[in-house]
Image (cartoon, rainbow, N blue to C red):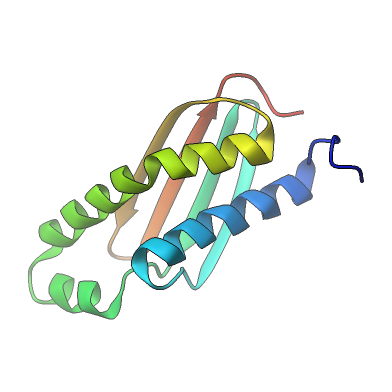
Length: 120
């Protein structure tokens, strides 16, 4: 495949997953235990499992769940520009919206990218 051919299907999903994991790992000092991406139309979604650090798990287990979720939302906002930039580079599409959130039990996160036009 030449550099000018856009990625598609499973190759695109894998490239997106790698980028999201790379950014998460650089930001948090570790990546998720499991992650996968999928797309449909102009939606691109990455699901990450077991993302919390040991310190975050301890805080959540000691009744500070809201503080952990608030910190995670701050992290996600701080990574938003880089996430959008990398996803735009991988997909060749403009990211018009980026949404992200975490769930504590089970320990999961989701990164949702809404693109300016469908992926083919």
